[in-house]
Length: 578
Image (cartoon, rainbow, N blue to C red; front, side):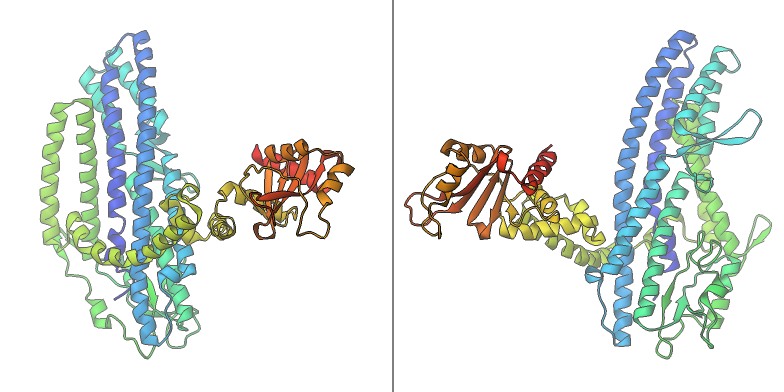
């Protein structure tokens, strides 16, 4: 069994497509409702006031929908990538066992974790960019179709409907219906400004996640081929492949192209190009095989007859591949009718709502009949049959997630919940092993020495330590009572008194330096505290031989005696505290 079957790759993005369609439905219904509300206002001044009001409400609604869509899509993207990586993990664990090699599972494999994190981040970012470039492809007066950003399309549609009603070009119902139709014919579109391509929102979203997962599994396959010390891979196969891909599916190929027995993967399949393996809308995958141990999944005869026989449909003979394309056209047509029903509902057009509802039922009946005749699963059936077996994949993926959760629990125990990010952010950090993750691990270790340190204390410590300004640890500032007494454990018990006399520092000055400290540095395993204030420094030592006294003054100096290093410490801390 391959890492991901072509059917799984096809349906891997179904839920994201549905989330995107739900997002589109909400926007279409809201815009249609506002068109119907404003189109009947014929007084120009009154219309302008209502127009501004509705546009403001619409912008708020759109922003809210985008925020919800972004949150839902990110969760689904993360789930799909986790599932894909885990299915890959399960597959390769068996391959490594067969090869007699040590296998590193996902939970411990930093390379795959980085691929996983990068794939999730890239795909989520792509969808986020899409929402910032969405709009409608609307007809222009000259008959051409032009893409317009959503705000511009919304305003123009409102204005055109109101103008047509107020000038008598069309009656209210016709004007509203035409305006709504222009939006539902298009549907929400996402534009890729880098390439200039404009696609339906659900198509763009599904393509983004399919491409992301496909790229990730491809890199995993290449890595495992290297670890397994094999140059040979098998390409998956499926019924209904496009003719130019059917020529090479199911075969064994050489990654390097140097094999005398097998042809080059790149040369034959076009791997790495848009038209080739893992390119545009390609559902094929590849995975390493062990020559002499593994056997091809398909015989030449099985590949030759992988497609069911052609069928007759409306006077035409259709191959299985042509049947799959015809089914997609029907699904697209049904989706358009669903948008029209939503638009009619939003605008209160009961007549159009009924007409389109009847049409949708007829389309579904024809779609189901055609699918049965062509021996094709319907959209819902494909989701049930070829969608990820979540009960299996999720069971395994939770094993990987348990590692994250255990790590997170330990982190909270060490640094406190108030200093920890939420579990979603930590999961991304964990798999990406970025600077924030490394900082949290260092902070966790820091807390072993300074249990009550805050994240801010650690960050300040890191800043000062990197500049070699301190040798100890930054600790929370706790006010201590300064006791000027003989240091019984010192070679110079009267040292503090001498320093105070030499530098004209009083007992009150010593206490003031502590009370107004902006930094406290712990030294010598907690037996010494250095309090830095802008006016002076007081150093305290653990008291020895005094009952009821915890700390005594060790040494001190005022601002006039600050050296360059002390001044630098004060400047850095002040800048940090701001």
